[in-house]
Length: 445
Ligand code: UD1
Image (cartoon, rainbow, N blue to C red; front, side, top):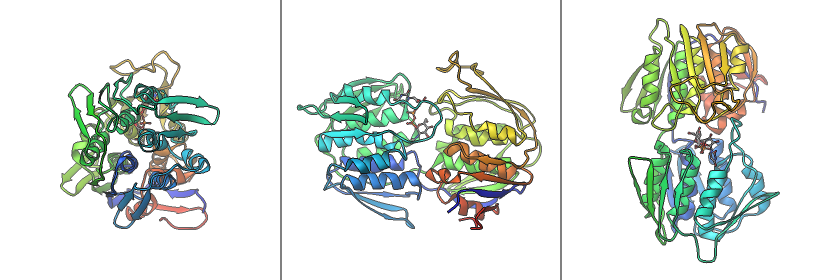
């Protein structure tokens, strides 16, 4: 099936769609099931490629995964965990970054783990040094070889550690949690990320029998236990997908109700959305995002770790900011190369300048280091249709929004990557009256 989409833009997106469990949580909860002695059940599981990849990788390690896709209910039985074939690990590792989180659970269960060349979005170097350093602190032997990283458990087992992260990395926080819960003794993690998805992973681990406390100063303490059981849990909703549809409503002058969107995880996004002139109504079923008419206003914002403005919200919102009257400034402080997607927007008529300087109140790690990590967006500029190519997951969704907002018919190629994180995005576009179809003639799905 072709992955080139023809998009007839210039029509408001309007209607109701549903978001299910968070892409940045569900695969990690699936990995957590590996630590248990009993089966687990996860509900609200979306049908996205990262879930497929982790299911396959768990299956390759002997976990029996069954997934009722319509109900979004998954069971994971880890009672026959075994070594996976290298060919399976190699084949699946390149499709996502989640395989790195298998390390702690596999060290506990099998005594060894292997990290192949990892996939994920190309939005910066995406090193794994924090992960490897953390595993070493627990006593693991970490050996980098040409084919990947080989990790083994010491004869005395993994022991608790004091871990201090140089940056509140989501992945490294999860690595620490998934390793510490069954290590001998207690672990203190300082400089932890405290994203809602991490809090939900802690909920899952607590259900399994772990002892974890979170202090107000980004310190997480874990008391290791000998064994964990399974869990039954409903995944928190995807706040990135919800915000992406909100930004799409704003950029296309539309009106989208996102069932499942959860206000408490989106406070920072909603504040900015309102400041730039977007409107929303919140009820217990979800959030209705709409363009209330009038000019959109510019904004100055910095991406940051939670509770700041999430880096994954940045790209969809920038499309809407091209329609705001005045100068907007976005300082990206989480990834050094997350403005690659703006090239296509400029091609479509947007006025966006990138800067190496930190254009924000907080000097970040990327200042003085030659990374174009600040953007100035001058609007409003009408967007014109173009032939564009999807660069990565979130940038790709932004391209789609831009094409939907632009006058004329665009072609957007490489859209398959969007299914890594947006469940049924084509059928949702259909529900919102978008005029999209594959260039090979297939209609939206
Ligand atoms: C997760 C999310 C991603 C989100 C990001 C930040 C998933 C699957 N992905 O990615 O959507 O944008 O958090 O909220 O949950 N770093 C290092 N060394 C390391 C690890 C990270 O230098 O070993 C750096 C990264 O290059 C980046 C920063 O730390 O600059 C944050 O990365 P991290 O929080 O670890 O992102 P992920 O967990 O990969």
